[in-house]
Image (cartoon, rainbow, N blue to C red; front, top):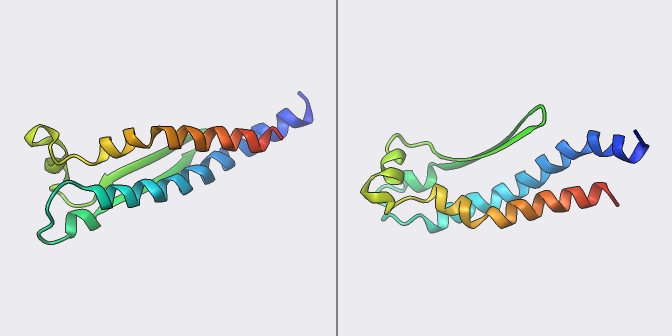
Length: 108
C-alpha cells in the first residue's frame, strides 16, 4: 500500500466528519426556517436538532425533534407538516458534494 493510499485511509473519516458538520449546520437552519407548521409556542421549531457522529468508519447525520409531539408533526395528517425527510432529501446533493469534496482534498 502506497503512502498516498495509507494517508487517505487515515484522513478520510475525519475529513468526511468535518464536511458533514458543515453541511449539518445548513440542514439544521433550513429545517427550522422551512418547518411548515404554525408556531404556537415556538418549542417545536426550536426543538429541531441535528447530530453528526462517528463510530469507527460509520458517520451518521441525524436530524430530529426534541419535543415529544415531533413524531405527530412528521407522520400525522399524511406528512403534511413533515420537515425532517423533506429537508434531508432536498439536501442529498449537498451531502454528496461535501463527501466528494472531502475525497478530492485527500487525493490532491
